Image 1: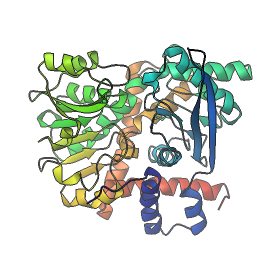
Image 2: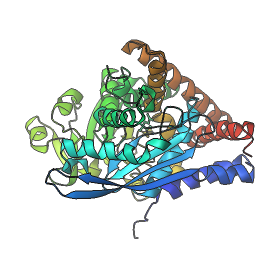
Image 3: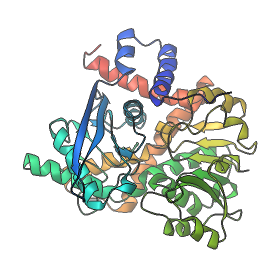
Length: 428
Ligand code: GLU
């Protein structure tokens, strides 16, 4: 059987259509919410260090801003497409709504591989992105943040370009900035920690003490590393971590049956999350092909890399020991898997609930920038855990009450909130 080609935007629409029908949503609202409200496709010319000019394709897509300014990251990825950004912008709308923060959904992307760009080329790319787009951005309009292969330094270059052009200081224009430059303490950890706060709540509902559980994780970027780190701190055992290896252009799974030392692995990874294979071998890790992470006999699997990783072809290889899929990435499971997973008796924590900790902390960052007064880390984590727990409880209770999966329950809550905002504004 040929592997199906999955389009993340079609996946996002399929998930939305299913719940819109269930809610008997008005046809106008349905049409409005099943596609982005605004798309900007543009090119960025960048002077390279060798004097040549390279032109990069870029996007900023706003799905919906009925509940507040559009919010969402900017990804740097060689395989970025308009449809990926469309899907991600849509998921941002639901993500902000499910945790009930007053923001809409947007997303940006640049087709590039930052591994192949020097620091000065990356800076010029970030500044070029804002130069093309500055009139569309701003704290009350559209607020970007880090995502796959972008970080705090990229955000600060973008902010600096925006402030240079507009001639003011607008720290709320972008989030995920460096601490001390308008960034919030805890923002780096927030997405990964949020994943584990939600997981902790689910484990307690399932009467599974964290310390008795094991997990296998796909990815070792910012989200995966901090999720793995907090999970280990709480006593869970990470058996395997799978990640991309830039040097070999292949993914590998690193396994230690007694438990991976996350700090140690973090010490041998590059800035984009590739673990050094030779160093891992020297530290006693077993090294397998990338897809092995899915086959481990663990309680929890955490896809924390990219979309479309768990497909109907992949479902049968998931070990029968797995009880929970914790979607730390955006869109890691294709819609045709949800039913299969349910039949396998696995509970799924849906992406836009599970990984909403990042944007929740981005919201805290904007609030702190607005006051020009910054909270300490404990206060940030306490507020973050409260928000994630509240969102989880609402989703979990609805899923139990209606006997539906948590993905559908989260969609019902999020879509209702956005549809209400659309109606209150008189758009439909
Ligand atoms: N890129 C992150 C996400 O997908 C964070 C977005 C934000 O903070 O605006 O949720």
